[in-house]
Amino acid sequence: MTLTRDQVVDLLSLIVAHDGRNPSESDLEAWSEQAALGRWTWPEARDAVITHFHHTSEWIMPSHVAVIIRGRRQDKASRRMAEHRTMLNQPASDTRVREIVDQVSASLGWVPKHGPVLSVPCPHCHAAPGYPCTRSGRTGKPDIAVAAHPSRRDKADQESQR
Ligand SMILES: [Zn+2]
Image (cartoon, rainbow, N blue to C red; front, side):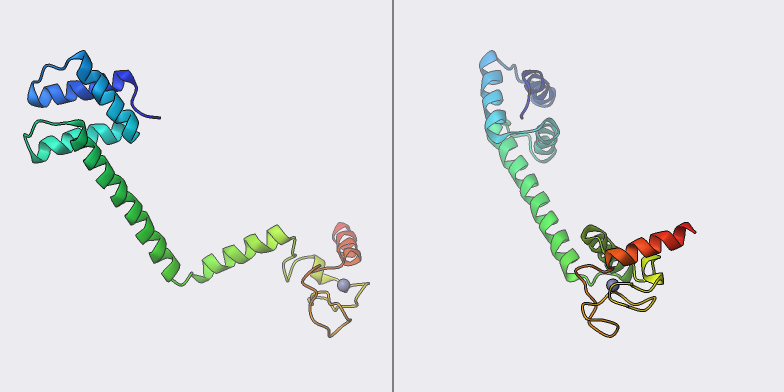
């Protein structure tokens, strides 16, 4: 994706407005090829031409535009990198941690600790209400693979429908 022929014409018109040149068909070809090579977008190319004439009255060539665009792209990339680094270095807020935990829990199919499922005792592992299901009975380690045994889910569903 790069400039269309119309956009290259617009670009040359913008240049004409600044330096009064008389562009030929071969100029159009040359600028089109350079635009394609650099994959210029219209906003990039337009900004580059305006920037060039802001700093100098030097006869503008495609290479001037290319250099400005490359610089802008590098700036943007390093800004993004810096933002990313800042983000990684910042300790996440409690709210953000909570959100992430909720997202992960939901994607793993875990049930909230105080949700309706845990409000009933588990018929399978006999975990007490409010306690997660365990692998080995009442005082065992929480069974994070299931969070709640299917029979407990059923029971909770029945309770909530009453
Ligand atoms: Zn259970």
